[in-house]
Image 1 (cartoon, helix red, strand yellow):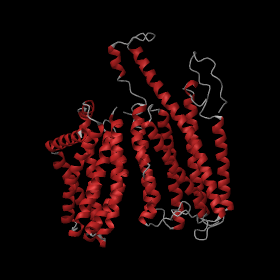
Image 2: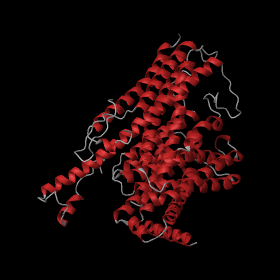
Image 3: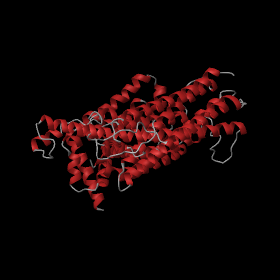
Length: 44
Length: 283
Length: 227
């Protein structure tokens, strides 16, 4: 494949950034969950 | 993510047995998003053919185009939720959290769109950036939502935040038609839209169109998963904020030597309450 | 009608405050002229300056607008003037319109001076055929800028990070005005062979922008300032 570096790079950047954001969100959610009583978690 | 357990006694100390923001539904959405992403990678990088004009670089389009479309959707959701907050009777903070979560994800998607677009531009045009209408207006869109997110971090109470940001988030959505039609308006270098064209005709090969479709499905699922989790995290953060404030007030009362078991607070101590910094942000 | 009278009263009050303090005439106007001169230093070529004169005029307007809005916002915050206005029972829509009209008046004076400066410094000339387009586009664009400035100024009043936040918020929003107004002014001045008829579609775009922010501001100014 021509220009493989650019093409794979664009996929890597896109999904890498999204994965990092997702990971940060989940981790923050877990940390905060410990401080908040279950009654406040409307999704439970 | 442990499974949800019933809260046994609401009277006792606040319990936190639910760890995280996941539920069965989000797990299903998450798995679907992962599968769709795997399909997108397989079709985008493998099965779909190289383009006649753009050669292999067309493969970047399968992430570039869906990410900006979903970013548009995210900003429309922000505007709708902002309107919901402003114009509903209850002024529910739930609307505000969805608006903020959606704008954050939209800004992320615009950012990755800009990066993948730059890489594509380097391959096709030979340069990373062109000052053409589409790129310029997209950069403008990005900066506008960075400003929106900055307003959300100004501090103050939650309703202040909600009101301020809703006033910005609602009209900002008008940039989207400007971005989409900028190519027509300014007759620029950027590709004209191939799928969402004004005349309703689609000019694209079958397998390429299918790959793009897979991309749209994948990014939509990713968005849905992210926005649910991010809104829940925002709800947790708001609650933790409020509790920190309440705790700080109790601590102040202790310092003043007041009896915390009774609700009696004399005037000298209420004056102190105003000095307690709100933990929501620097003021 | 009472709303309109209130709006005019507030506009008069704001202009009177500005006039008495002389800040607009003694500081903002010279600031705008300094930026015009600095553009000339930076570009340092008469043909280039003549080509880009319309854009520079509008850039100078945008920068001066920021300064004016910052100042208005700090005035409102200092003595809780906005709170006083709010509890006086005046409809927030009237407050929004009054403040917009005051800002519009100041900006229009500024623009006349800046166009004159462009004629003198950048050798732009104003053909007789372009005057109608010049005036219409300037009025439409400036009204839009004034609405945006007032709305975001109201948002920023009472926030501590105002000085740094306001440019970040306002400049992207007024960027479409910068584009449209510059193209219209180019047509009006006949810059680089542009013809007058090319300018009118841009006036249409500016009008859409202005109406949008006029409506948005009228609706949102109340909820925005009520904290």
